[in-house]
Every structure is written in structure tokens, then in C-alpha cells.
Image 1 (cartoon, rainbow, N blue to C red):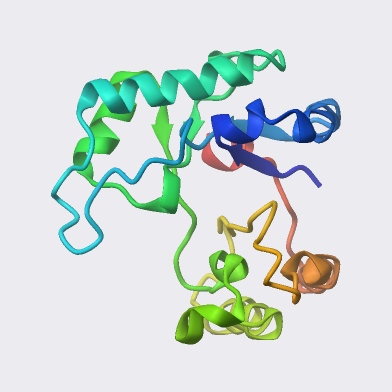
Image 2 (image 1 turned 180 degrees about the vertical axis):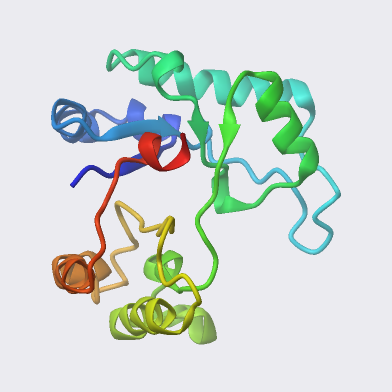
Length: 191
């Protein structure tokens, strides 16, 4: 199946990841932008309060695309943008649109996005079993299951997380296929 990888400019810029990025591209996965330096755009407690100017936002995002261009990824073929921390407001969505991009986010309802957590985070930490169960429970209990769902997983996690969720990904995908799901590329889903 084809996945979508939204990577920061810092990730694209890191020579240690260049080989993997080339492999992902060659395999036909979607490679997109996730901000150059993983900026926090809006206050955690007051979401409508911006922490960046339009100029800073634009410069950072265009710097992300400049790093992508080093791998032959043109802006025109990567028009979906996943904001850093998956945290934004209407102004950020408008600025994204002004750049000719479409802001996307994961579908809420599961804990797939918590795969970055590790035990020292206390109550925030979610084991892989808890994450997996949240996805399968949502599939069974939501009126439309996981149809049209965007699950967010992280390509890398803190070394303190030894219970890596990606080790459970094959089992999850196998189970969802048994339940009748088909996986489509991001572009096809959001067209």
C-alpha cells in the first residue's frame, strides 16, 4: 500500500535520512511538507492566538519545499500540507490556501497519533496495545467505521519509547483487510 509521509525540512535536510527519502520516493509514496523547523503556530491554551507572522509562516513553509526540491519533489506534486503538531487555526488554514496548498490533518477518534509518547510522559503515554485497541474499537463502534479515515503515525519516535507501534502495523493492516477495508493513496482519498 502507498502511504503519505509529511516530513520537516530538518528531516529532508539530514544526510542520515537521504537514502530512506529516496527509497520512499522511488516506491511511489506521497512525500509532503510538515514545516521546515516544526514551528508551533498557535498557543496551546488560546488557539486563536498566533505565535508566528504570515511572513515567518511563509518563509518556513517555503524552506520546507526547498528541501523537498533537493529530492526532485516539486510543490505542484505535494499540495497537501500537514501542520506541525497538527495544531493550527483558521488563519493558518487561510495562509496555507494563499500559498496554493491544502491543509490536512488526521481524523480524530483514535489514539494512532499517540505513537510518539513514552513512559516518562506519564498520563500522556499510550502503549501500542492501547493504540491498536483504540483503532479497532473505533472501527467497530463508529457509524462509518474507518471509511475515509486518515490515521497519523510517526516515522520515528523517541528512543525512550521501546514499545514501537510500527511493529504492530502489519497486524493492524491485515486485520483491517480482513474486515473489508481497502487502502487508497492520499491523493485518491482527498480528490
